[in-house]
Each structure stands twice: as structure tokens, then as C-alpha cells.
Image (cartoon, rainbow, N blue to C red; front, side, top):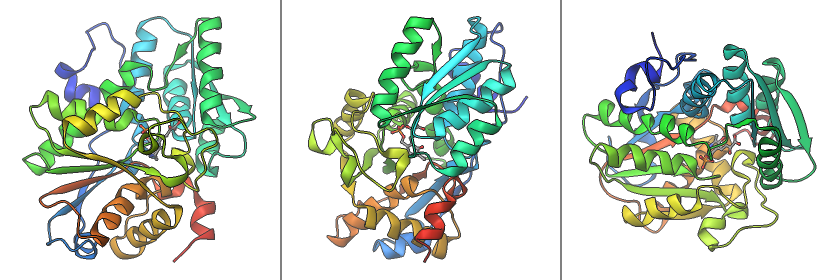
Length: 325
Ligand code: AN7
């Protein structure tokens, strides 16, 4: 059987009784990006990109969802529920469809990219459009899950984090060593939490560099943002669930959580597509935007750096056509 649970079984909370719901997620490419390295003033071979957009539904969310849905099925759930800026709902809808579970998704109205919305629709999720942002949608989803006794598959569900930590295991295997630095976009902060967990479980401590959009940077400002704004809708989040663990990952690794403007995000987004042949969604480009930002003041960290490109460019065709090179 393929998929990341089969691959990393002994490191994940599954038993012989767990029905495994998989679409063959994980095993994504790690590609060298010498043009990014050069533009950041670094030597060839310094930068690698982890292409998480090549997961079955086009984002890293599938790593956590294969486990969260498998465990929901094992526990006898009939319906799963999540709030989402788009990718979590696309992934939950697909894995729920495969498992034969009902799926309800709470989405911020008018703020979900077309590709992601079309996935939730096609996989048959029941869609609740929320008048308000992601943070409000999450509050509603948490409340609905509690009142109805349904399984929440947001990253508050620890199986999501457990599944996502396998991204770090793969990077260690693909490089044959640990990277010195790990760059990653940060929204609800589950993924930076998961990668740090994965690395440390394997005895490694790369410096963790998380990147938020300037208009949605609660971790940089040290307080929730009431009305987060950014063109990178996936990370338009004002009050991240995994706040404490993200800050811990930063501090324990001597890392950094910084912010990049929408203009910097779009510049990196175009650079990756036009110079590296890699089409990611705008939120994913935030990590590379952060690298370029540090490079401007010659502060790009030395050594080997992995940037996680969390979602595929096809997720958000409207932005691509509006801001093409
Ligand atoms: C492409 O789908 O929060 O810091 O509801 O879709 O773990 O939240 C998506 C987040 C980065 C941020 N890149 O990851 C959702 C959602 C992409 C994303 C993030 C998201 P976290």
C-alpha cells in the first residue's frame, strides 16, 4: 500500500485496527533551486524546494488529513468538519469522500481561491459560507463540532500535526542529512509546529524561519490581528491556533518569524514560476520572499536551506492571471 502512513507507520499513532484512508500522499519532490540561491547571494546547491503542491489534492494538508480521517473512521465518526481558508477544506472533502464520511466545511465568504472551492464542491462537501474571516469561521466550526459531537479536522486535531511531521522525515531522507535552515509560510501555525516536531523526533534542530504576510502577522506583532489582510488568502489568519508551539519552534531553534509584504510575496511567486519552472500558490511563495528579504541586507542564513512550497499554483488561477510576470 502506498501513502505516508504505510511508509512511516511505526512513527505514527496507528494500529492494526486503523482503517487507512490514503490517496498516495507524501513522497513529494525536493528540488535544487540554484537560481533562487544566486538571487539570494548564496552558492549553488544552497537552496532546495519541497514541492508539497504535488500531493493528491495539491497541498501539504493531505499529510495530516490521511491520518485525521483514518482515525475518525476508526473512532466511528460519521461526519467530519473544518473551517478553512481553502486547502484544508479541499483535502478534508477528498479524504472524507474516499472514506464515505459526510464533510462540512466553514469558509470565509468570497475569500477562498477558485481551485480550492471547486475541490470542496466536487468532492461533495456541505459548504457553510461565513460572513467574516477564517478566525470567525474556526470559532463557529469549533462550536458546531462541540454541539453536534462531530470530529473537527482542523490542526487542533493532533493527528493532523502527526501526519504533517512526516514532511521533515522525507527531507532528512532526501538530503541524507538535516538542512541547516527550514523556511516555511505560517498561517494557523500547524505546519511549522509539525516540521519542528518531525525534525526533533529524529534528533535534528535546523533553524526554523516562519513567514507571515505583513497584513496578517500576529506572531510578528505578538498579538492577534482583528482584520487580517493579504492577497495570499491561505494565510489570511489573525489568531493562529498553534501560536505557542510556533513560537517555541522559533525560540528553541534560534530561528525567526518574520513578515513579507504582498508585493514581496508576488515577486517571489513570479520568480519561482518564471526562473525555476515551479508554480506554487502565493502563500507558499512567502517562504522564498522571506529568503529574498533577508538577502537584501545580506542576512540570508548560511548553509543548506529548505523552503517548503505548501500548495500548487493551480489552486489560485485568478491571482496568476492578474499578476503574471
Ligand atoms: C498553501 O486551509 O489554514 O501555518 O484552512 O493553505 O499550518 O496554517 C491553510 C494554510 C501555508 C499555512 N500554505 O499553514 C486552511 C489553512 C498554504 C496553506 C498555509 C496554508 P499553517
